Structures are given as structure tokens and as C-alpha cells.
Amino acid sequence: MITIRNEKQLKNSMILLRLFIGWHFLYEGIIKLYNPDWTSFGYLASAQGPFRPLFLWMTSDSLISIADWGNMIALTFVGLSLVLGIFEKWGALVGACLLALYYLAHPSFPWVTQLNVEGSYWFINKNLIELVACVVIYQIPTSQFFGLQRILYNKKEEPKLS
Image 1 (cartoon, rainbow, N blue to C red):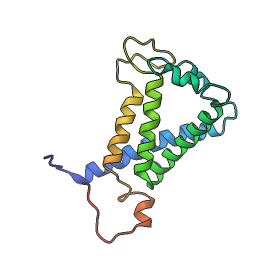
Image 2 (cartoon, helix red, strand yellow; image 1 turned 120 degrees about the horizontal axis):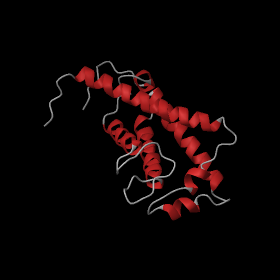
Image 3 (spheres, rainbow, N blue to C red; image 1 turned 90 degrees about the vertical axis):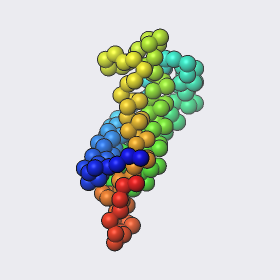
């Protein structure tokens, strides 16, 4: 059993984690939505690792616009849900799935050539770390403390982390 010594600090830290990750997703989604030339083609076409054929298949003429729009909408949804604090668990789940796809497209395996990445990674990269953070947000939701969910479902008693 885990004993939480300072629940208020944990709650505030979890809220900040949710807001920062939400902001990252929202910014990435909005910046892509407002750039008419943006496409995921380059990222998908340079995919490495065991799932490379799947990502190359997504670059076909019939699928690339679906991949682009799906990515932009999913990024924006995750960002809005985490920043606003509504549908937070769905946002965290979609965010974790997106990050899993990004990781699988460019895995940090030592035997895979690293293309289009910052720095050097060995199994663990930024996408995988943010994926785990989304899993933590899914398991410890905070929108009942700070966000639209708190306003929409105004409860008299103070909720607790559990």
C-alpha cells in the first residue's frame, strides 16, 4: 500500500502535468491546422523499425489526407480535453495511442537507424515518456479539482485522489 504524505501537492503536480501535456498537444494540433502545407508524409515515409510497412502504406495517395486530418483532430481533441479538464480520461487515452503510433514509427531501438530525431536515445525517448505520463493522467484524473468538469458537476464535498 502506498501512503500519500501530502495529497494537496500531489494533486497540484498532477494538475500541472495534465495542463502542460494538454498544452503540448493543443499547440501541435493548432499549428498543424493553421498550416495548409503541413502533412505527415515525411514523418511516415521515413518510418523505421518493424512497423515500417504499415506507416509506408499510410502515405498512399488515398490515405495520407485521412492520416493528416486524423492526426490534427486527435492532437487538438487531446489538447482541449486536458487543458479544459473535460473528457480527460478519453483525452489521455487518445494521447497515449497517438504517442504509441509516433514511437512505433520511429522506435528508439539500438538496432534501428535514428532518422529525424533530436539527440540520441536508447529504447526510451520523449514520446514514450509522454505516453507514460498520459497513462498516469488516465489513472489519476484531476478534472474534478480543476477544469470544466468541476464546474459542470459541481459537488458539495471535496473529492479526493484515489
